[in-house]
Image (cartoon, rainbow, N blue to C red):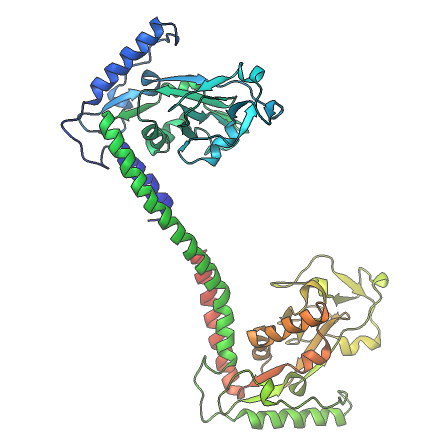
Amino acid sequence: MKAADLRKAILQYAVEGKLVQQDNQDEPASILYEKIIAEKENLIKQGKIKKEKPLPPITNDDIPYNIPENWKWVRLGEVCEIKRGNGLTKNDFTDSGIPCIHYGQIHKYYKYSTHTTLSYTSEQVAYKLKTVDYTDIIMVITSENINDVCKSIAWLGNYQIVTGGHTAIIKHWINPLYLIYLFNSNCFQLQKNKIAKGMKVIEVSSEKLKHIIFPLPPLKEQERIVKKIDELMGLCDKLEQEEEKLLALDKNFMENLPKSILQYAVEGKLVNQDIYDEPASILYKKIIAEKENLIKQGKIKKEKPLPSITDDDIPYNIPENWKWVRLGEVATINGGYAFKSGLFKNHGIRVIRISDFNENGLINKNIVRYEYFDKLNEYMLNKYNIIICMTGGTVGKSLLIADVTEPMVTNQRVATIKIRTINEQYIHYVILSNLIQNIIQKAKLSTNDNISLDTIKCFPIPLPPLKEQERIIKKVDELLTYCNKLKDYIL
């Protein structure tokens, strides 16, 4: 059970007489009720409070559950005097004067206050407001949020204050904290929701508040109930803190789990190696031979050799049948064409720009196009090409083109990675892993949110045998699917 649900259960148990034991020596609530009625009649005779019309008796149909024998069902207006506050605007606040509490300040307190938030008003304004004495309850009766209606605090300060509109002042002869806990219980909240009126502004009238019924325990039991609730609410506070820590861990866990899966994959720890797989060293030689053949045929350009991978470049050990290579050795990497933005059109070839990237791929808004000409051929995107942003807010974002539904070319600062022989999805998972993302972050910090083509070409790639690449992709896809399901469950 979550802390919020536990709090509700504790409060409901309390007002059902199930939280603490009854004591036969306690003066029963019926006598307390008679004393309160007598006290109210005496105050009416003295002219200190007004006589009100009698409230309807409580019938069996009104009673929602059984209570202990020495308790009594009563109406709030029978045992309390409820006064509605009057106007107090922001313009009435002063730097000093008579201490006052505004209805908005009540939301800052849990159950009681012994001080105000040092709001003051002038004596002239305070003279027109309702006064709040020790143990009085201040209740919000108007709000835009139904959950804030009837939020209450007990005033336990040793001096008198005033309060303004949107509040009710409840004077009573009951333990004030028992009343506060009662007002937060389902017993009270269900009745409050029935009498609350309004759409944009929700209000509970002081007259209807008087009709709410509640269980009145003996005075001494009220004290025991408050003490036990205080103790249990303290435990709920600790539980809530642990829930928040756990939720934070869950969120971090869900953020880090996919990264961990990818990192395990590119370290050769996700699937078993097979001694019968053709080792990556042979695959590497085939790729180099194929590239040299394409250069001879004039299909790709010859590039300057990339620096050899040294021990300083290798961040971790990989299986014996794997090989460390540079991305530029096993792929053809080009930047995009430098289009003139002023010449973009609504027809022609779609142009992929850095602003077209988001977390989930390419956005479909604000698509721009350009008229085709022969020079664009080398910038055309094909199925399974990888594109990566080289500058701006999306720097380092990458995408594997799963399908090409229309002709597309890349704009400048969007690099295209074309791979042969190797599984493109595996290479993309390497780019998404911490191995490459950490390199991108370092490059961004040193170059003001930019990565160069040379940086991309020099990415160190752990190359597995081709068949193991396929096993890795299958396992990663399976685990990332589980991650998404787990994310939905936890969050």
